[in-house]
Length: 233
Image (cartoon, rainbow, N blue to C red):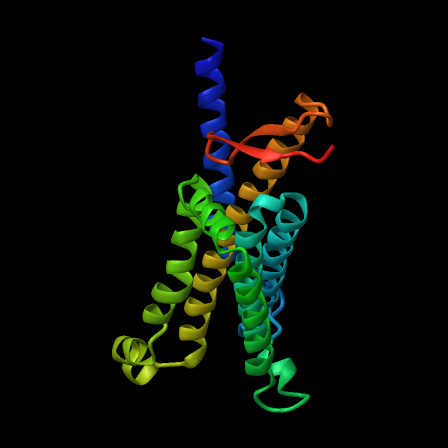
């Protein structure tokens, strides 16, 4: 009975957290419009929150890379991917230095991260596979599809011109597109934080169970499996 109650409460907790994540973009858009009187410009609450969520996602995977050597290849790739997205979102800032700087920075970050992953390709592939079978991967996939596909399609100018005709105002399209993008960033960040927190927690539990003198340690992965990791004497 206690186990069933725990499962029910855990599910309710996840549902409430998901509801909060889904409501955040709309709440920020409402604040931009009715509190700040902003038209969802470059420095609106919606845009700034996108940057904050991207930064949090990057830092989460950096934390994973530092905490678990066996996850480092995947974590570096993931951190690099979201860092490139963050750099692209800040293109207006980089253009103040010189036009097109963001593309150079993205190329540098992508090359460095891919180079690191390729140097340990087998470990990177194994770590990536562990992530892909986790619950967090499903949430992140939904977030990325929302961000990279749905928001682009939903934000097509021709769609909004056809809907509003002579009443078309660009701010309507921008608000809908940016709010959808923020939802995608929110889901991606939630997935990253959940996966990294679980992985780091499992690592700590494994180290607490096994003394340093052992030559190998059985470590649970984020989906409940077990793998062996060499432990330094």
